[in-house]
Structures are given as C-alpha cells and as structure tokens.
Amino acid sequence: MSDPMTPQTLGDAYEPDVTRLLRDCQAGNTQASEELLPLVYDQLRRAAQVRMGGERASHTLQATALVHEAYMRLVGSQELEWANRAHFYFACAEAMRRILIEHARSRARVKRGGDGQRPPQRIPLEELDLGDQQDSSRILMLDEALRRLESEDPKAANVVRLRYFAGLSVDQTAAAMGLSASTVDREWAYARARLHRLMQDS
Image (cartoon, rainbow, N blue to C red):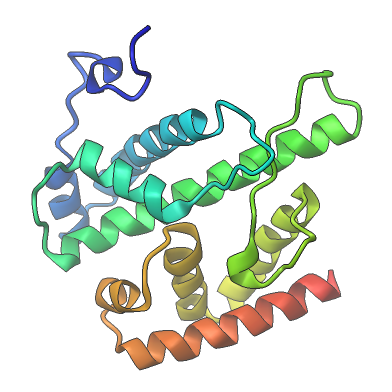
C-alpha cells in the first residue's frame, strides 16, 4: 500500500510553487495568501490523518511536528528568509486551528448521537494549562475566546496562533512577528490569562 504522505498523492499536475506564493504574500498579494492556505491545510490534514490513524488513547496531535513536516513537504530544504517563513507559519497556524475545530466538532456530533462512528481522539491542550478537561467543548470554547481576544488585542492573538497552533518557539514567534523575545513572552503570558478568563466567562 502506498504511503498517503508521498508527494505523488498530490498529483503530477499539481506542483505548487510555495516559495513563489510566499514571496507574493510578502509583496502584499492577497490572492497568493488565499492560494497558500489550502496547500498548507491539505498537507497538515494529511499528516494529522496519518498520526491519528491508530486512534490510540495516548495520541497527541503535536503542532510542531506536523508543521515541520508540512514545511519540508512544501518547501523542502530551502532556507527561506523569516519575512517569507512568517507567512508560511501564519498559514500553518490557521490550518491547524481549522483541523482542531474540525475534529472537535466531529467529536461533539458523535457525543450527541452522531453517526455511530468512533469519534476522533481528543487533542490535548496542556500548553494552555487546561488540565484534564481536554474535551471537544473546551477546544470550541478556546476558538471562540481566541476570536474575542483578536478583537481586543490582535497582536496577542497572533502570538497565540504562532505559539500554540503552529508550535513555534518564543524566538521563532518573535522573528516571524518582528518583535523581541521579551515582548512575545509578555504577550503570551497575557494571552493565556485572558483566554482563561474569556473561557470561564463563556
């Protein structure tokens, strides 16, 4: 059986020039951003499906590993400038958010009766200190809280996207956003506290 993650599964006629799209994104081409997200989403979703194939009770969907795999599949060994990589990681963050929500909604449907199929494995959120309450409702609450945080403080929301959904380190997030590491640390601490408060309020 062929590996579902092999490049051939993308189709011979489907050879996206990701580096070109990233350069176009940096130049302000909104169409390039719209073209990039589906490519990133497709790769991350394929990787997630492989990781979750066994539906093991101990399964952990790790953003860092999936994003790295998507990067290597789409960009290869090229060392892109951070100005370009930032667009890639933001696209990864949005794709990971959508994957998390997709699985959470599917799990919630099954809990309500659904179609009788085995639900997707829960996705740990320990990086945001949510303890043992890692069910689908908490993931959906997190997404709603993040949307509210974005309306209040877009910079803090972007730090959450890159740190949590794309799995970037503090230094990588700082480079992607053009901030100092100390600023990212401060925004990350604030965002976590604010998200908790928003989730409690909901």
